[in-house]
Length: 288
Image (tube, rainbow, N blue to C red; front, side, top):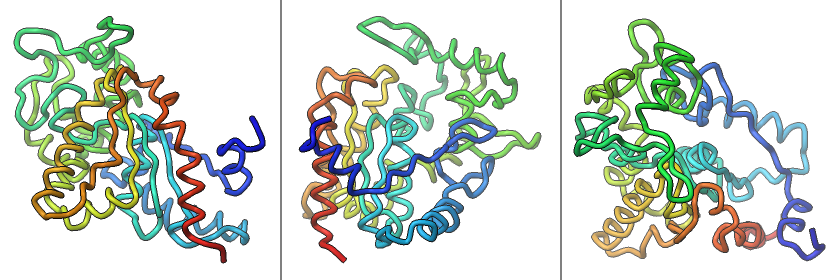
């Protein structure tokens, strides 16, 4: 890494903290939930203060705390920045887990009747190099074998542990049947508090300024897990709501990168610019 590389300069200037997101139900996304407990609140009220006490040279104003992540980490970082703006000053998120549950990978959890079949065809969960390699049915049945009752700790079951309510058996409820794919709209409705698109639409006064001033979000238009669909909807909502309120576009830093997939988006020009953007953000804070 060259001496003038922005990444080198960033690492030399910052404390870099890698958070462990794993719990009994898999990735807990740092979002407080009925199944995982108050993991987000503990992060901001216990862990961060403990780290700052251990390293007193840290700057402790919100603007100096930057959060970033990819995939589930992309959703986590975005959630933390939007939920705790008094703690985190800016976020750089890439290829986040579904940010709008009207396109949960490819299913509209609020309106579709089945998550496995659409228009008579199997719904695909994973694609690569133009090939459809795994269906939503196959992935969820695999998880059902690994952990019946939504306790496999794998991708979909970890989502239910974050977004969905606790069942009578004490385990996460799923918004669709693992065997048939039939969607339970009552469960889906109870997931709305974690639907970032829904939050933006219902409280634009809070969320538009945060997206306008603090959020950088990128995803590839060929994301292997179809995550670009939800990001597109979010970007459209941000633009529409901004226009309705006669404000600058809050979605101008939400970018869908042509030709990039879940991995290659990290090599895109948009994401390679992040270290420089972070340095510029820190420089704008001035020195203490």
